Image (cartoon, rainbow, N blue to C red; front, side, top):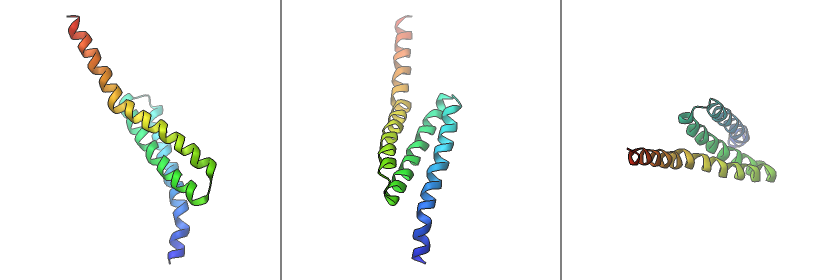
Length: 99
């Protein structure tokens, strides 16, 4: 029983990483800035699945690649959550100052 479960884990990680990455990339491709942040969140989840998969199968190249992609996902989420709001606040301040 345990052996059957252990054999299913790599496939579950692989497909979870694949599906979350595809949905995340679709959200980014839509060009909607509100949805882009959710795309990066899905990419981050995908990175986690792929990192676990790479460690499980011993793929060092995939592991390093996904660690790098994790940094870009975190940057995208940071820009979505904080940089966008800071830019909006600055624009509002500039608009108020010009009145």
